[in-house]
Length: 164
Image: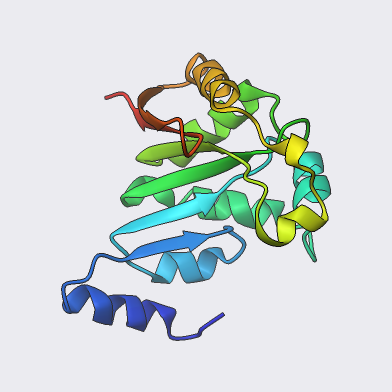
């Protein structure tokens, strides 16, 4: 990881650029040091076991991801979940609890797309249809204070915002 990322983001901010930090959440200390316009953290599993099986990390970073999620309430932020059919598209209440605890501004629930290197380990059948993504987001909304505010069927993405 680039050691001067916080300074680089600060420089871009000073020059008038809108900065976004997109992270898998495994380096909370770096996230803590960065001040982008918006921070995105990926959360692609409702529990540790699914995380280890689906994400195949080099180490068990589950606790670090939760530490990163805990930083989101203090900044403009989003948690992004990519649904993979048959792999992590269960336990909407579990996701809802983690979203709620994060205090993130936005939640993005999106469908996996059969692209790039992922095609070596997942099949086209792992892509959920937009309606499946929408139904899962609705199920999540039933367990937390986030509500659906926008969606893009062609991109298979549903945006949720916290109700205030």
